[in-house]
Every structure is written in structure tokens, then in C-alpha cells.
Amino acid sequence: MGRRGDPFAGIPGRRIFVAVPVSSEAREAIEAVVATVRSAAEPGQREVRWVRLDGLHVTLRFIGPTLEPGIPEALAAVRAAAATTAPFEAGISGAGAFPGPDRPRALWLGIGPGAEELAALTRAVDRELAGRGWPAAERPFRPHLTLARSDGIASGARTAERLVAASAGLDIAWPVDRLILFESVTGGGPARYVPIDEAPLEGAPGALSAGAGPHSASISLPERHRSG
Image (cartoon, rainbow, N blue to C red; front, side, top):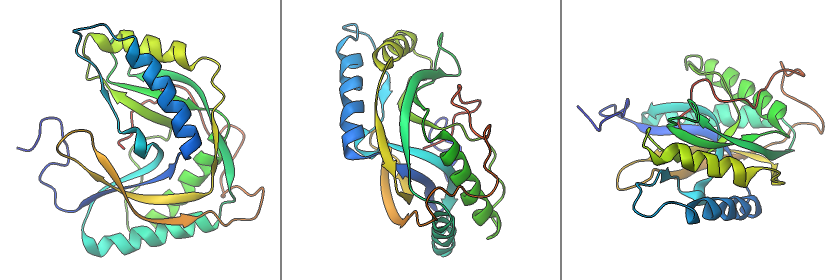
């Protein structure tokens, strides 16, 4: 058996996923929100596990453990998807907890502006991966930024309440101009997200990848929280 709760323990390969990064300016604004939430924590209470804020990203597709021969194929899929999508802007819209506020396991910031474009870009990535032999994504896409994992601890609900309050009325946006294939490196604290390679978005201005529509994305609570 591997680490408790790790479904990929013992499976060979690099844990890879496709994501769009958050700009340094947006990250600094989010760091200020997190600092506000953490400063109000009750002394002596076990704290939620905050992610490494230096690697903030919106995960589009978690691919999972992949052997070295599969890395170039994954990169080819990322580049092909990026070539069909024009750059756009994404922005924060509220905060929430999964699976619910009473005993959450994860805390997140939602995406409002850019949600439709992120959904279309995700479908493009999924299509390109499927064309190279990867199975369909198991989880529906819900655009969000994971900030912390609480594993159901008692302080999780109160932390979620403070995050929702601190995030009300946030005006944080950033340009989405590239896709990155990341490797998730675990062990010795929070996971580290190491870029393998990136691909610029090069589609025609105003173009969405095929299949986009006015109701193609949701910023509601993720039905099943995506890894990464």
C-alpha cells in the first residue's frame, strides 16, 4: 500500500496535468486574501493545508502517471489545443468549499470571466488527448483555483467562512495566454508543480475552440474536485 488516500501510489510514471497559470500580479492579490484568512485563525487549532501559492493554476485536465514515452505525445496534444484558441482574460468570482461548507475537504476560488473560454479550451485538450489514445476525462470540468485542503478537520468550516467573506467583491483578473504541461511532485509537504513545457495560445482573436456555447461552463461548486 502507498500513502493513505493516494490513488496513484505505486503506479510508475510522472504525474502530469494540463493547466493555465495565474499571473504574478493576480497571485500576489490572492496571497493577500489568504494572508487575511490565515491571520484570523484561532490559536491552537489545527490549520487547513494551504497549497503552494507560487504554483497557482487552473487545472484543465489531470492526466495522471505517465511513462516517459508518453510525455512527448501529451505535449503534442497540449500544443495542438493551444493552436486553436486565442488568448483571453479570466477572473475570480467568489469562493467555496467541496463537498460543502459544513465539513469541507477543499477550499477554492471560483472563476467568472473566462469560464466559457476555459471550458472550450478544456474540450480542445480532451479531444487532442483522446486522438492520441488517452481515455475520456472522468470528471466534469468546473473552473476553480484550489487554495487549501482541509480533509474534514474541525477548523475547515470556519476557514471556509472566512475565505468566502474575504473573497466577496474581489476584482482579480489575469491574461490567459498559454497552456502548461505540469508534473505534480509529491512528498515532503505540499505538492510541487513543475512545468515540463508550455504552448502559447495562437488561435484567431475572438475564436473559441469547437463546441463552445453560452452555457458550456459553470462556476458552481465542483461536483467532483479535480486533482492538481
